[in-house]
Length: 400
Image (tube, rainbow, N blue to C red; front, side, top):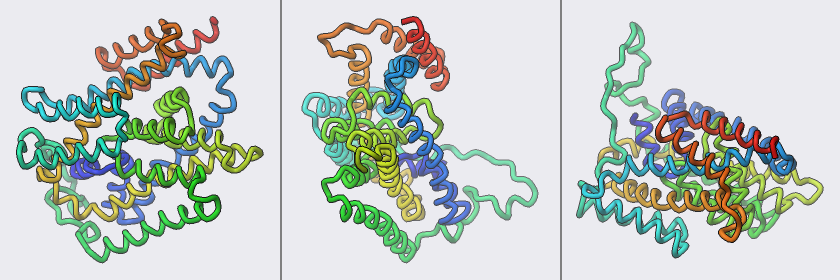
């Protein structure tokens, strides 16, 4: 619980950070590196393979049918994410009206005025910082420790068990020298590949821009995978044109159907962008796309390793301190409004695939409705909903 609360305070993928934290706490630096890396690598290889199938065979009828069934379910899953995050953060409007106002303003900012996601995050953090001074009761509760649970300790376990009552292991204690060493190594691990990309291809090249963009995504996105999606959409679809909005939905569908953290959808974005931009030339599209997916994954997850290895000993002491948790609460409230915008975006592209001027897709609406009922009312597992929706889409493709 201590580790999870810390990871929730950080930007970036908290599931991978938690795996890194556990490995670090148990087996020092190399334990964290091994745990965090092996949490990501299988998903990277799998998504490279699936992304290749998508770009090479996406127009095959049965593949298109499966994706047709999954996309409405994804819209329902994102709607469930809004409800899940909102219910944990916003409380009742009468209890925390400021948080509801932050969520509403964030939605209006991104939906109406197209304000960049980093500015929304910064504004929400500022409101949270001010709220800690003027309305602390509305911003309390984020990042706090859960209730302690008693654990039955077997004979001999007391010598190695790390618990709430045991002394902090030496490697997990605060050390300025260790912080400096991790910072220097981390800077080198960022600068060397980025410098190589810039030197070989130029700053404006697709791979260099992917590295820089996903570094910012890793540092600016609080609230898990669904929080990073609006920022990735703004950059990858609207600004850089690495993929289309429909392809973004397809990527999320693939991410939902594969094991591993959902944040690995960024590998799909990198692969499709590298394929479309032919980053290694038209005769090496797969190699270029795979390289792009690897570059995106490296720059997305590198900051998470550094946060855990450098900041674990220091930030552990900040839990339950409203000065540190209130900005997170404000950011999470803003994320709720931003994901509402994402839900509307997915719903629009799924239900009106040719735009509002086109026809309303009744079949997709029925799949989305059934998926929502399964998720909200019957509390079905996401993978079960995805599998059932994929089967319905496959049947549609066979009957068409």
